[in-house]
Amino acid sequence: MEEQIVNFSIGKKLYSGFIAVLVILVIVGVIGYLAAIKIDKEYTFLLDDRVKKIEMVNEVITIEKDMSINSLAYFAFSEQRDLDAIKSKQEEFANILSELKQATKQSKTKEILNELEEAGARYNELTSKVFESQEKGLEAETNKYVTETNEAEEALKDKALELKQVQMEEVNETRTELKRYVVATKIFLILLVAAGTILGGVIAYFIARSITRPVRKVTAALKEVTAGNLQVDKLRIRNKDEVGEMGMAFNQLVEDLQNILGKVNQSALQLSAQSQELSASTEQSAASSQMMASTAEENMKGSSMQRELISEAVVSMEEMSEGIKQIAESNENMLHSAEVVESLVGQGEEATEHVSDQIEDIHVSIKETEEYMKILENHASEIQKVTGLITAISEQTNLLALNAAIEAARAGEAGKGFAVVAEEVRKLAEQSKTSAAEIAAMVKEIQKDTSLAAASIQAGSNKVEQGLSASQTSLKVFKEIKSSVTDVGEKVETVSAAIEELEAMTEAVSQSAHQVRAIAEKTATIAHDSSAATEEQLAAIEQIATSSQALASLATELQTEASKFRM
Image 1 (cartoon, one colour):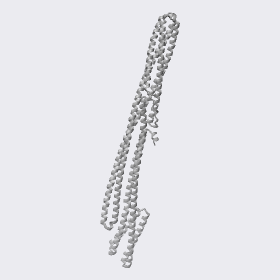
Image 2 (cartoon, rainbow, N blue to C red; image 1 turned 90 degrees about the horizontal axis):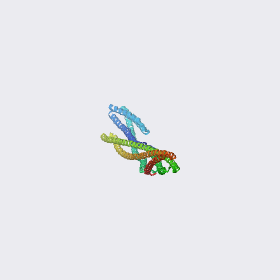
Image 3 (cartoon, one colour; image 1 turned 180 degrees about the vertical axis):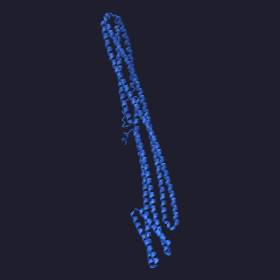
Image 4 (spheres, rainbow, N blue to C red; image 1 turned 135 degrees about the horizontal axis):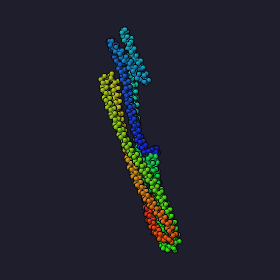
């Protein structure tokens, strides 16, 4: 995982971390929402299907009792209204059985319904036979049918109770499955929240580590360079982001500075040596000129010696001119190297400014993510309000179940089945209230984990602020290096100007030496002119000596500036 993070840019690292945390939170929220929908569907199915079927079975039992009462009334009083009531109850009985068949999918329940329907048809048939035999006055046959009718009624009642028992078992089974699902959902949500929290922390740790460690390395190395230590080890940064590019640029900068300062030291040493040679040549030229002046009075005697000395002076001037040209070439190379260093420092400064701007943009993104976390906390609060509403509805359902139980108690024997249903509804309402409370507790856990995630993001923001401070420090160091390199360039330009003046003076001295040699050949006739040329040569040699001393001073100053850096 760390290898993959290293290959990302800083922006991709932070965006990936924030998106991962948001995805985890969204997954937790979606799963919680789907679990709530699933629980709501199960409770709706339990109330609308299972409980409704029990109510219909109770109606069947009630209808059976009403038919029995009406049959006894008609048998005793033979009133038409009792017969009409019996027929009405038979139709109602058939309609309820038909509705139960349509709503039932279990084979066992369908089998009981078919048996119940057959028992009802048998009961209705025997009841009709009882009435027919009574009308015909067949007492023995009537008593026989009455006995069979009672048996059919008992069979009908048993089947109705059996159907009710099956429906109660299905209600209990559905309730047990719902409890298992609620427990499993709780455990899954807790594990998911814990895993999301751990994963978010791991992502934040690796992202912060991949940014801060290389920035600290670059900052420490820049401080060493600022202190004049160019022997600092090369930075080994595996990151493929902007910090990695900055580390590569820093390594290249240190290497170029080492090369340039090495050349500067070498050029300064050569310049110092050639200045000393120039001083020695100047002293020799001065001695030669003095000897030529002293022998001017003895022109006839020492003309040959004077000509040889002047020839030596000309050769010395030519050698000195070649040395000055070499110094000028070395100085040009040193000036070019200083310009290259200044360009590289400018590039490093621009790269550091670019990194600082990106870190600032990242800091803004972190602030926006903090706002999103606050919005998520508000959504969690809304979910808590919904669970409160579910609790209130459960309490209201509990109250309605209590009222239904009271009404069932008033109804007496006929309301016992409905009282059982009311008790079951009350229990389910209590369970709904408990589940809503548990969901509210889970929402509080989510809010707690969201707060932890927000704290983690805040810690990441602090790390980014530290990175921003470090990049600003790096930018300041680059500016100081750029100022030092500019100062070195100015001094090198000063040396170049002095070398140009020295070269011009050497050329003038060389021309004067040639003139002196020409004059020496005519010493017999132009002794006065030879003396004047000698004086002019002495003045030029003094200027050369002055310039060579200034050049030696500049070389010493250049060596002092270069010695500040350890290579």
